[in-house]
Image 1: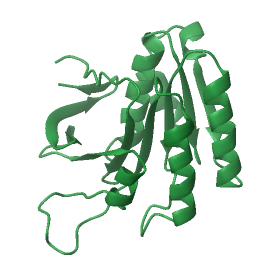
Image 2 (image 1 turned 90 degrees about the vertical axis):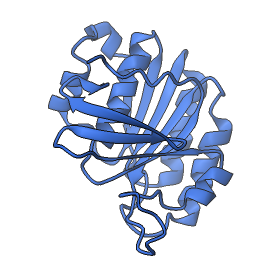
Image 3 (image 1 turned 60 degrees about the vertical axis):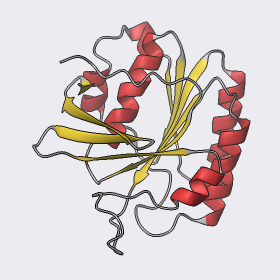
Image 4 (image 1 turned 135 degrees about the vertical axis):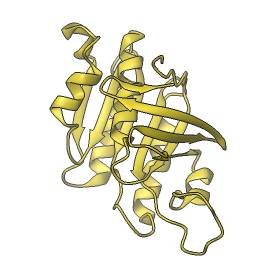
Length: 196
């Protein structure tokens, strides 16, 4: 089994995850890859990643390399947090990835004001920077989909420039399914990240 390479460059992605399946781990996995390529990562979240999980995923990086991971908190006003994030993305050298983890409420429709600020992120981040938004998905109550998870406000997010990805549990404990634009990849989650 080899480490999964997401091979991203400047994409805008909305990742909808089934609760506690590894959305933050996927973000950290990608962050470690971007840092390994010599670039910086900006991470914004209400809660910082679990320190033990962080050190597992960054274990192969040196202390100097790990210092290219810049974390900020969403505490307070979301618009100001987005302003700070955009300022850092455009002023720091060689930023390769912006991750916004748990950037919206975990259920219900995505708030219109949050969607507006997210559109700013999509438009104002330089095209060379990949933007990854991670949020909880939901179950399709209408029965129109057989998939275990659907992205909330998928159409609105697409109009704002974001491709929809989905991540859910597989058949056994460590297996995950990642749907990238309708292409499904079967992955296994390990201490070091995702492997194929």
